[in-house]
Length: 110
Length: 113
Image (tube, rainbow over all chains, first blue to last red; front, side):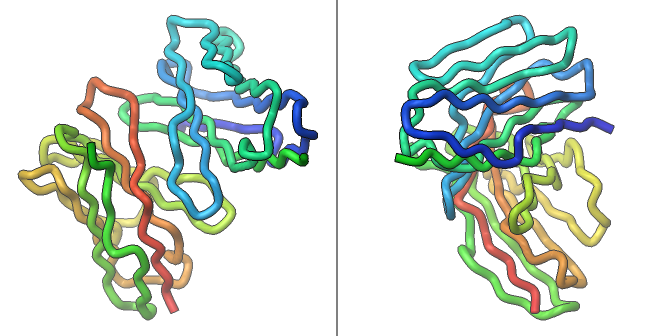
């Protein structure tokens, strides 16, 4: 069945550094790839997404890249801030459902 | 615009009982999705409803079921509760089968004793 692998499971960076989270997916028919941020005790919030006809998308300090051939997509956060600390989930939409990665706990130290 | 709402916030049950969780989607959204998030783990897809019909279900036993009402709100029922059913149950909605973006509710924390 569909599977999404996400790495690393935890990531610690200093404020101002960049953070990169990587995901791979198994279903070659996947065509939509969102990223969600979940702060402690809160609901997941969509922060950026990309569709299969686009290779890269940027929104201020956040960017996502997609390599359909390799079935890889990545989240890049530049100039990290303590408020970026949260769990980040990638997901891939295959046949009629969204499959989530296992999450990356990002800790940004001041 | 009101977001996705869920009730109750917390639910405590004992093993073998039944639990009913409710979700109201964003106004105008016809699709409702249910996910289970066990402590420290990712989101596992449970069920997807659209226009009152079940469109897809994840790898969960039949004692997990639900329905969607004419006003597009939804209910998740878990029968014969087991200890491992303890988790945060999240509901999400989207504008329909052709729309990808899903917006999550705050979740219902189910504890099975």
